[in-house]
Image 1: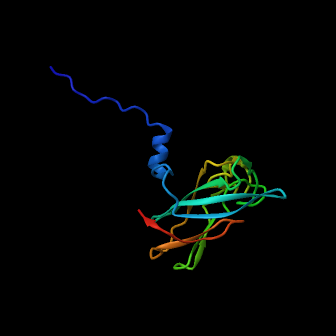
Image 2: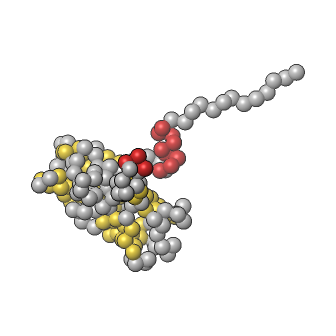
Image 3: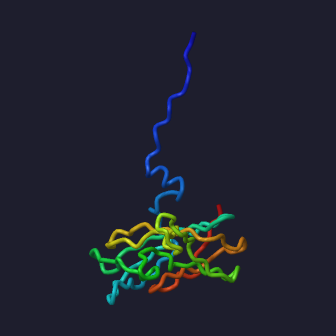
Length: 170
């Protein structure tokens, strides 16, 4: 009698699962880069936003980008400049689609545990507490783009508009 079988696969690491969901880690060169200011209370801090990818699918559109300080050393950034007060996420980052004549904002939701009827949840990254010379990876998930769209403008409050950013399709 011979025994045969297969080994039980090891559990996937968080990095592996994240890479499967979001694609490869954002180590590639940016496809667009814009400068601007992050507003925290009454202060403004110079920053750089680097767009890594706009990936459109039938049900959603993924924006991957990075945020870093334009002033070098670490800077506090915990504010609502990319959202709406009192939230600290990036729901204010939008995609402007000229073909579909629409402006897309990230998906939001009402967390059940809060017991409120407010869309305080966002399928997007929260604003980091601080940024420095090393870019912080960011993302947001949007509704689907018009199937004919090949570029979009990425609009970040307080920043120049990243115009005609190429769209990839999955």
